[in-house]
Length: 417
Ligand code: FEO
Image 1 (cartoon, rainbow, N blue to C red):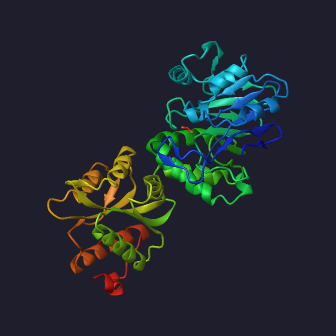
Image 2 (cartoon, rainbow, N blue to C red; image 1 turned 90 degrees about the vertical axis):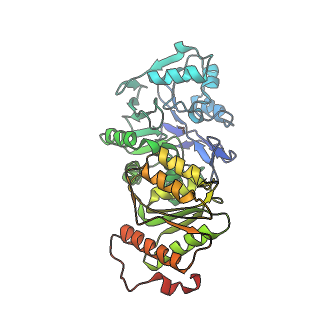
Image 3 (tube, protein in one colour; image 1 turned 180 degrees about the vertical axis):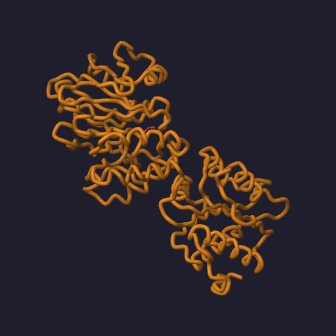
């Protein structure tokens, strides 16, 4: 689907809906698609903000030509050099030889890496707070280093109070007709925004907090990110989401249970934990078999909830191969502000539980609850009682209250024992 949509009288969304690409950055699944948002500003001097992924252009260039209506394109602002926004720079410079490519000095270093034939006389470097005067619209720039690349920046239209925030406040999910948050049910985009944030930007929480602090001084009537829908109704809510995620503050009470199991014993332990948590009053419980569900969805829910159980069988004296990449990513991102419970299974020398414990030891911001539970072979009655006690500790933590000691999950769950 390729269309133009008015953001305001003089600004158009000219992005691309990509429903074809299977995996973003060639590893994150896109069941709902993705957009590469690009914007056209109609003014005395014409301007495009952010381009689109190479190979997805469709009639992107024709739409720009229609909007120009015989005029030249004067500026292409590149807020971020990742190829999903910069892939069409080279074609645009060929179509509009007089056009200036606008970025900061780190942008140019990256253009040199990606586009070896780029004519640097076409580059215009801008700095923090500098004004680019289009005639009616006066644009300025806010550097956002490591949100999520070194050259990342935002463009702010001081005239119409629009923040072109690039990846910040972006989400997976193609646009299904409505481009603004007040034109659609935003639930899908909020989930896909968290998945986008946690998997792509999640390592850079401090830098995201700094960027939010900087942007909070601006009057913002629209947030126009480079992915997903545009925000004009619930701007404060979106900013709050990002601010919380940057600090690992959960969206809701709840617990994620993720496990890797070969013969079903670790899976049985996971199911028992889930049932116990439910009996103890936890309402949001997400159980994931890591062999079945892509890690990006699991990581997104780990950001969403405060409690986390990780379980692994032992595989060649180590963590199960489908759990290992999740631990590796969470470790790389410096996960914190979570309660963690550990469980698993072994037959001779173990390794699964030991691996999760090493992971937890490397993350000082994680609070491990209780003792790790490692079962040899199939779980027995006493193992289910230990699991119940661990679930009770987790429920106390995430619900911030004591659980009635008369309430025993095992009594309600006798057929598992
Ligand atoms: Fe949407 Fe970091 O590229």
